[in-house]
Amino acid sequence: MPSPRVLNVYDNGALVGTDLIGSKGQGFIVDIDDERTLFDTGMRGRYLMHNLEKLRVDPESVDRVVLSHGHMDHTGGLPDFLEARETPVTVHAHPLFDQRKARGFKGLPYKPLSAPRLLPEQREKAVFRHIDAWTTLSDHMMVVTAPPLKEMDSLSERLLVKGPEGWTKDLMEDELSLALATEDGLVLVTGCCHRGILNLLSSVDEAFESPISAVVGGLHMGSYSEGDVDHMVDMLKKRHGLPGLYLNHCTGEDAVTRVRHNLGLDGVNEFYVGTELTMKTAANNIFIKKL
Image 1: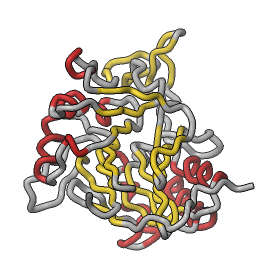
Image 2 (image 1 turned 120 degrees about the horizontal axis):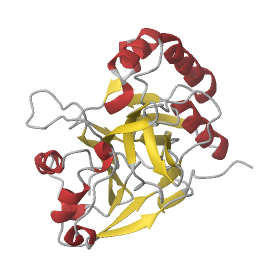
Image 3 (image 1 turned 180 degrees about the horizontal axis):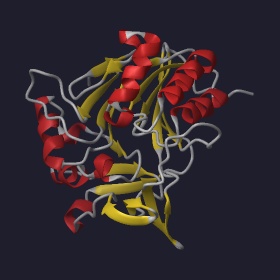
Image 4 (image 1 turned 30 degrees about the vertical axis):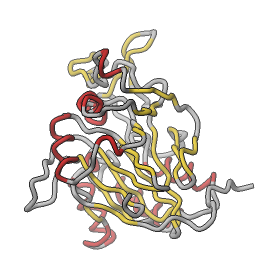
């Protein structure tokens, strides 16, 4: 097993000069505590499997899957991944992740976004475990559930969910993120962070004594104005010690450019397919809740 790391295996972009494929979606391999987690599976299974092969990641080496939320671009590769395995694997997801989801206009759906249906032979290889509360998966890795909506979020009127009363705005209550305990502090790994990066950071900061050292993943800031981005960066500095930013997927090119306007060219580390962040795990348990 490699040293503790987060390896990008699926993203909108891939490293130039490689055979890796970039396509809309998100997927990471997280190696920590001598265990391997696949966090999201991207949209297209054949692209996921291609990238895993090129990056020398055996599907059978994955100990668990964690799905950040129920959108197709984060779950679409699951059927092919399951088919590639000989043995079943535990799949962690929020109880609401398999609700019907869609992109809509004025409350009416027009494009399905739901997680894929599994064939019987695929479902036999998936042992689903629902997570609806913060849950420790290993000594240095915890699942963090959707944070409270206390300030600026990235929710959209165009993202809908089908409930008992019909189609309504999706508040993304099924979102899961990972918190990794490293010697430099907590590393947060996100899918899309629809409920807002400031809300997620505040939720984690309020819970634990350890600082947040890095944020890896998508922040869904495509709809943010320049003023919104400036406010977000200001809060990162004032409240959260300006963690390292390793951003990709849905963050948005304009938003990344604006963050760099505030922080300089090195203010954001791009995190395409084939990119990895290595780390050292904390010597002691830093998942210590504040009194």
